[in-house]
Length: 192
Image (cartoon, rainbow, N blue to C red; front, top):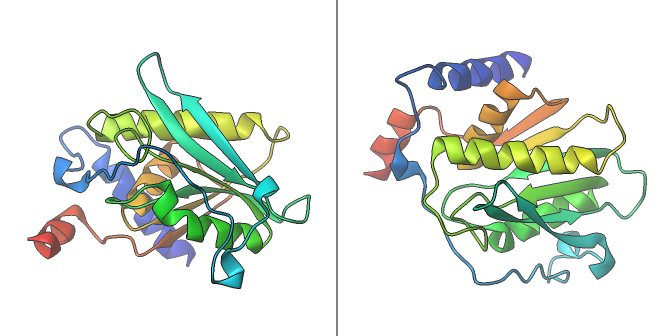
């Protein structure tokens, strides 16, 4: 497990070298006018009390504002603090079921929509822009926690690349990658 994490981190570091970048075809933003963040569900694992959901707005700079959500674990203090990175072609509302499930496992879960996604500022996402977004989101999340609190990064699909990019710059206490792509070239071949 540790070797796989190191290999993924090395891939992220290699991608950050001059001349290497994520291709724009990876950024497939899905928009919404407003978030719902529905606390109920037909699945018991996805039901949370409305009071556990906190809508958050994060200003990256004077032009970029990000939609975000924090779902607190029912029992406090939580088992840990998770920063969730969603995949391409989706937004927080569409992935809210995942966030609620993690929270119901006893974790405080914070998730953010990147620029161009969800109800965040409607600008074209770029690798540099998403890095700035996750840096600002991480700073906000840490400002809400006691000093020295460790974070768990959880990346799903494209969010695995985003989590890995953040981990290369700000190492987490732990990282979970669900269905990440092996390489940009393989992803390009699969999507054509």
